[in-house]
Picture (cartoon, helix red, strand yellow):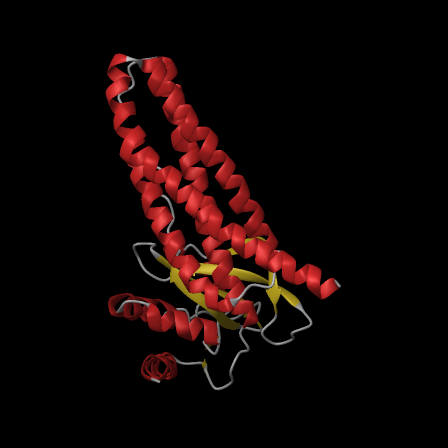
Length: 113
Length: 175
């Protein structure tokens, strides 16, 4: 648990996106278990101090509708939800809450086969 | 009129997407099954033939990557109005294409570098395969983000504690 000096602590998780829910249901059971542990582990953490293995980053130049105000555009973030980096999820970060948008396979290329 | 133009744009976008995936898949299959074997055989005998085949991979995959990058940008820019029903089948085909691209890259990696010029051609081909892989992967993800943007969030799925979140995940898994 981090001290929230600058409003950067993750205080809530919202998974109420039908797209996220449908994609989640399609994940294999073992992936769901691991991803659930990863997402639960976010609560109370400082967004700037998350483990690098999560590959948390904002998608450059990509803006989406705010989950709180549909007239507003906000940045979209993604993080890896499994340790093997095969699955990721995206979300917006608004007022201390992660609003998950979608999740699924992330077929990143291994540059050194 | 504007609606007609928009509809036309949508259908062209989807028609082209299917055709582009097919085209890329055909090329990758051919390059893996036929050309890949030839390249490996020729590399030790006729390096200039192997170089030409590598260059063909470079040219084709580069062209394909340009299209996928453009299509990805169009999705993010909100220039398209996609049929959500078609996203899943497209994503599955893109998955298959990504797997095939991994196979092609492995085959290229196995080409013995008998000459410096062949080594350079092989490096270019592998780099363009990686670029196409990244482009297809980004396009696939853009489709999922598009789907997420169209979805209307439902209340009651907010949690502030791990236990409450666990209960929400149980709920969405079973409902």
